[in-house]
Image 1: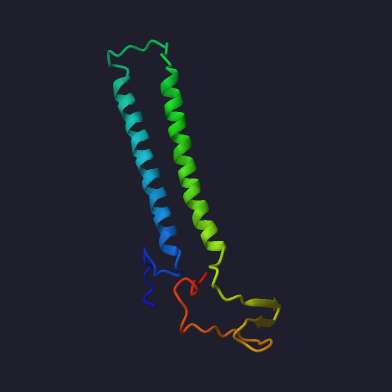
Image 2: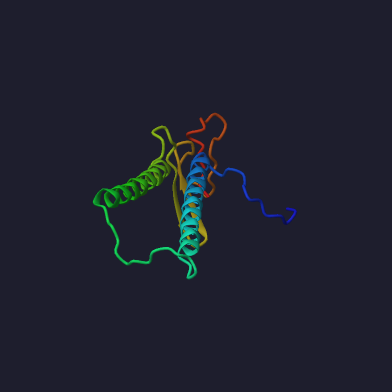
Length: 141
């Protein structure tokens, strides 16, 4: 290892690309919202600075349709992001229907594994990676 830190490491599982996409979408959404709000703060700071002739009357005109629109839009965005993340989570925790079941027991310094490809119990887990489809070869870190 050359000691360098890579920004985009190699994929560790079949689902990691989708998780990375969700992560970068959240980063982009947060950055866009942050820039928008920062722009509003700067624009209002310039518009209402002390020497500006802008009206500083305290009355506000609130419109119900506008309030409902931005609240609904925020709710829809939150539900979409939640649904996207929940879908990825469910895909990760539920194995494919053709997955091989491997049962492992770990007690301090003793490990026992049981799976259909081995006869009886063994203290080492050897999985037949040769002819498996990509959906069955999913690794988790």
